[in-house]
Length: 339
Ligand SMILES: [Zn+2]
Image (cartoon, rainbow, N blue to C red; front, side):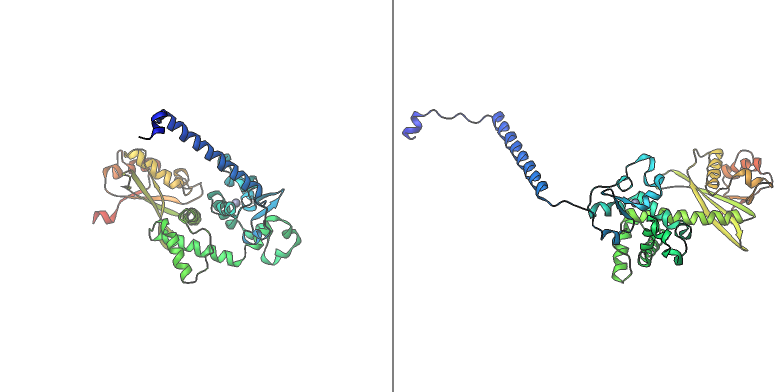
């Protein structure tokens, strides 16, 4: 032991509480340092502003009052802001960043508005292509945006929609979309840089389904007579689902089309019958119209189910409920299941 140490009072060991206090103090100092560093960065960085070249890439953008708006979303307020939800590009976005625009471009409300925008009769909105040079058309922001939505972009969307349709048709998951897009890029197909994720693919699929359903409704409504077919099965979550089809003749050819998948409230005949009616309602078919000569639309003439008593029972089965409303309907026991 040195002589100095002998005369000086040995320092007490640091207590755990003082060590904690020291650590907390250090953390506070770090935070203050970081905040002042961020502040210095904010003060020194250049002011972000709207770049006119963005309009070339995103023709639906509109810059006014130092904010960015989306012309497509502005056209469909109820879709752009469902139940009053926030949509920065509808209210006016003051963050001039490419990331914000890209984020809006792939957002569900924007995709839905865009699908409606494409679906709407273009000639009704902006006239025929020859009329695009009309000063009146040029004056409207939506006409301007539509003119810039050139053939290249339409071709890209067409490729992307076809890809999503193929995925759905062959039962592939929408998470395959990036992989399919990578393949398309490799073979030189034009697909652009956006909408290449599963979220966009799901949104595209919703609109593809809506268009197919709309076409089906028109075709079904044009038929004179139809037959309803239904069968139940449990889905992956073991919930009973009723698959509802209709069969009719269109342009001389018999057609069988799925109209809906409905979950019955219960598995008794009445629950299944109500589910079938809900499914028919989804394509504008209701029992009143289908059973009355005076009402428009196709007439129900046949009901085709499996042989389960809950379906074919003449006293309390689904068939019994149908016959109550339409006594002339011919109940058929599915031929495939009887052979
Ligand atoms: Zn938008």
